[in-house]
Image (cartoon, rainbow, N blue to C red):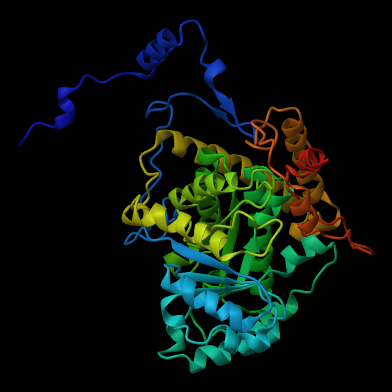
Length: 472
């Protein structure tokens, strides 16, 4: 038997590592070079199997912390489709698909024109995601297109994006969810691989939530859908095949990687408690989108770099699909240039940096395993608090979720205004020639809701206040 390669090296203990690090720090302590996340998780400068002893499983096996697909590292390249001119959008779709996009996120709100919108698109080879408005018309229009598409409808995949609880959260008015499960029961056989529900965890991030809060509230939202589906007679394994989670990724690279992994593992833990018939039912699809909160109008081309870091975090964390928002998303309709830059950010990471060749690139990192474990603990504690207060809807009605997020929103904004949190080109290294006043005037604004059932969650950009001062 050949001697092990590792036997040629003397094992180094955690204590020995610390002694070496302290010697190199020349008088600084470990605390001085450690960081603390928004959730209070301490990130030390070193980890090994002594302080992270846990084995976090394998790819493709519950709790799916390391990903649900053992056979591929491919991440869907999602193209954002917005606008009202179906014929023009169809040209943009065909150009995008020919240029490397493998999925479409369709936000246009005219299902009657989707036949034109999707003309020439073979739906078997892409995923199609919708915004989730007008449920009956959305289903009617897409099913008609799908049945006319070449090949079997069973091959068509994607998600309608229905999220009445997420819509309620933003509008401040409760939306009935009964219709959702009646539609699911009536249509589940026509497109068996097509999802119905998309839990928009990204809303919490884009309102200022911490990573643990985003996971916990998305988990609570998904759990309420699960409870209501069971009451409506939807089988557990059927329901789990029809739900996905949308997350947002900020530029806090390491903790955002851990966030995707922690969400996947916690959802698996919840589903396993209900004893599904199939092991794969505890896996879920995760759709990651670059941050709309940490996007700047000032020196907006810096958003290209932010998008790259955020896209990497989603891929390394194991997201099944990644949508890169165009760098001018906050103040303009996407242009051919901004679309191409968004798409190519995704493509370059996969085709040139070989992210599509690696299964679970985070595997084996003691640091990321530690962050995932700690983040999951923090999120689970918040989730349990929500459940103890009556569940998701009850915590909307009593404003627990909104107030919890708002506390961190204010802290983020204070840190930003005090310079403790940096956005290059906005509150540090400002470009003096960057004219932004006209762009801020074009920015989409949301009118305050009136006659609400509870306090709505307000989505906002963290840099907006300082940018308005820069514009004067």
